[in-house]
Image 1 (spheres, rainbow, N blue to C red):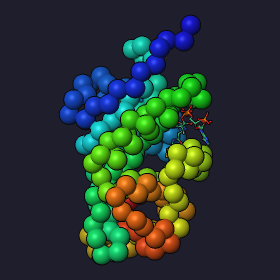
Image 2 (cartoon, rainbow, N blue to C red):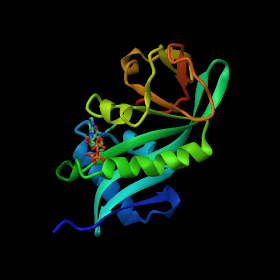
Image 3 (cartoon, protein in one colour):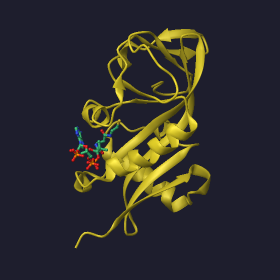
Length: 179
Ligand SMILES: CC(C)(COP(=O)(O)OP(=O)(O)OC[C@H]1O[C@@H](n2cnc3c(N)ncnc32)[C@H](O)[C@@H]1OP(=O)(O)O)[C@@H](O)C(=O)NCCC(=O)NCCS
């Protein structure tokens, strides 16, 4: 019998050590190239956790960033660390976690953004996320730097702004992968 699945949202501050450890372990299991910096990028905002009983089978989070666009620093809900355990995919957990985070996004931010894996790009596109076609860059401590390696992987979900997807988009700075 498949246990009933449930998606719960909570801020990082309201997750106990066991839930955070389970989320971190799940992400290291799903992503071969997962790093501690990637994990750190997933903290400090809202998490959506998919539980089958006491077992964590999915994780996603939404953190605040600033994306520079057309001379403005847009308040952005940035989606991080989306993963469903390999043996639990195709059961609606990914969609349920994104539903929960997109609700927060629509109520609190000017736009949503994320850096998609090749594998998941179609998953986001089917939900209405739009591929950023213009050049990407990051505002580093040494000034603005192009991030060519991330071109073609960035998706946005405009909430209160209208965007020209072929112009430049610049993210705020952080250690590790900028996007
Ligand atoms: C992407 C991922 C989170 C999807 O989770 P999931 O629980 O399998 O997705 P769901 O069962 O909720 O699928 C929802 C819908 O998206 C579709 N879908 C799921 N994964 C898809 C994919 N990789 N590409 C295209 N469509 C996808 C499903 O067919 C389903 O469509 P339907 O509503 O028409 O039936 C999961 O495949 C995963 O963890 N992948 C590996 C990690 C990864 O790449 N994460 C993304 C990081 S940016």
